[in-house]
Every structure is written in structure tokens, then in C-alpha cells.
Length: 77
Image (cartoon, rainbow, N blue to C red; front, top):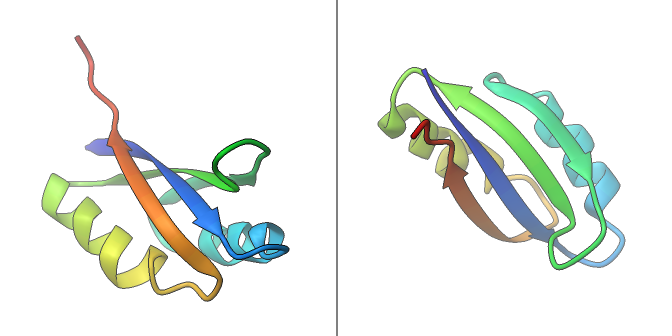
């Protein structure tokens, strides 16, 4: 199982709607709107890195109102 934090920038005033829409995507553990340089932070999981990448590109980035994403895979050192 691969997990990652996905940091999302949205259009002005869209953070809450984006977080709500993303929270319904299978594989998303948590989606919260936050303050700072990013508007929404998502924790997601998938079986492989490839599946995680497909989720980000094909599902998360397609949500209306998103302008940019940054995916940060969780590592266990």
C-alpha cells in the first residue's frame, strides 16, 4: 500500500467545494481545506505508485476549481 499527501491550489473561493468533491473519490482517506500556500490537503492511498499516479491525474486533477497539485509520497525510513 502506497500513501501520499496531495497539496492542492484552487481557484479563489473553491477550496471547500474541491475538498468535498475529492473526499468522495475512492482511495482518498481525508481531504481538508487549509490556509497557507495550498488550499486543500489530501491524504490518499493506492496499491501501487502507478495506481496512485493514475488517481491523481485521472480523478483528482479533473475536479473543477483545481489549478495545481503537488504529490508527496509517504516514506518510512
